[in-house]
Image (cartoon, rainbow, N blue to C red; front, top):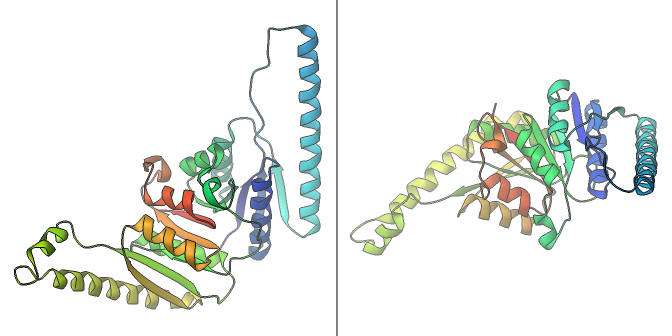
Length: 296
């Protein structure tokens, strides 16, 4: 159950989409929404032409006044929709401030926007979103697209670990009631199996290794479905051979999902991940929103 949701706001189009999604989730869960606008802590220029510095100061003041006005309007509009919303504006780097506010407020979810929805623009995750992912201690929803409300076609990537089970439960919280939830498990043959296959079936029955791997995965998949029947969502597990990042990206690209949920391991989450990991690859390449769930 979500009780507090934090959303980073910077008045950009991706930020507006993230705020709209966060507001819809807050309404659905009767949760508090905390909007975080991190103000710049840059030091003022001390040298230069006095007239130029004066003009820069006037421009900066006008920009800040406009930001305050637009943020106030956004808060009023959300409250008119019935959202319990609060705006905070701490000073400091947004990528650190947003996760810090989430920790202080005991938030269960952070919503952030990112750039683009198609092609190479999907690779431009953005420095703020990346920093939030690396510093957050709670779930992070990287929002893509203009849709709002609860998700209707969620996909959960699973390796049958406890963290993957958490990702399934948390994805169900963000999904429309009773909608089916698809799970995908990427399976691979043990290291060295390719060499065994070169020896031929008569010398090394490598197909029996494949069958054993698949049988084990099927047993785990059936257990996941049985253990999460109380979620109220029909569950289906697909077993696909291949590297996890490739399997997840392919499923998301061709099946029209609006959410991918997956877990990340380690107490410091993304701080311990290397570029090219399954989580980071999925976030950068997914055509839809991505929910990152940290280990308990």
